[in-house]
Image (cartoon, rainbow, N blue to C red; front, side):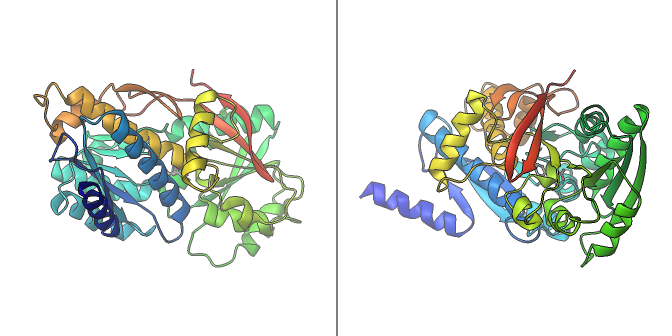
Length: 385
Ligand code: PHE
């Protein structure tokens, strides 16, 4: 009887958009506000991270019943203007002690401004733009990540293009409406030109309906490598359109290409596509394989992408921080300030690698290069220097 009542409570909360950890030792769970793009353009980013967060939350429920977390999910619909009001609601109406999200850096910036005002820590699973943790006047001192930054990702892309692909001339395609896209291409350009290469930049926006003219123009520039510095909903169709115009020219990108929808959008193609990311399911590392198995069991055999792994690691970061803050909290529920203090210098091993949150509130982690031909194949893993 008690059991079924408990199950019913969980279901109701799930309908409201949250998933509650059933009441255990604590009647007063720590509320984790989660803001993610569950629908709209970047929906796979939100869905995968939410899946990862939930796997971790369920696992923790069994592992350590002395903690209770309540995850409350808000769908920002891949719309920048949705993020601030939703974040505010998670804090003011749902009582979030920490906010986890979002994915696209420009959207996370909106959440950061609200969290700064409210004095609540923000943990982004995946936003890599350097400004989020550098521009403290705007975003405060309590923005943390479990992912690396674009200064690292972009540098590695520049080296890869120069040293592995032996390209000397690059064209970078930049979505001028996305901080991530602009920042990543700047970092790539800095490294690639320092090595001796030449980069020309072309701009697009996600509002553009058709990339045919752009793709033709880029083909005419005779590049030896093409960087699509953006997200999969635009990159996929560009790859599809590029069949003749970019024939034989390798295409590279960052983690924004890491989506199960990339290859279906690109269609039948023999293009050589590589992207940098945080995790790839075909990595033989036993920690990665352990997570792949859990994910497949939970989600009908689907392989997890980087976002799923980062979501899982973000939930563990919250748990590890709460554990570390427990002493300061007198054994009870930590305050947002105590959580924030605990996130500084936090160390644990995640499925995306060893996470040690440094003074820039970012871990130094390996980047994985994924070859996307037919499937996402592990190409190489590069450790930070
Ligand atoms: N790094 C991207 C950004 O900052 C988001 C992203 C991360 C997308 C990981 C896919 C996978 O906007």
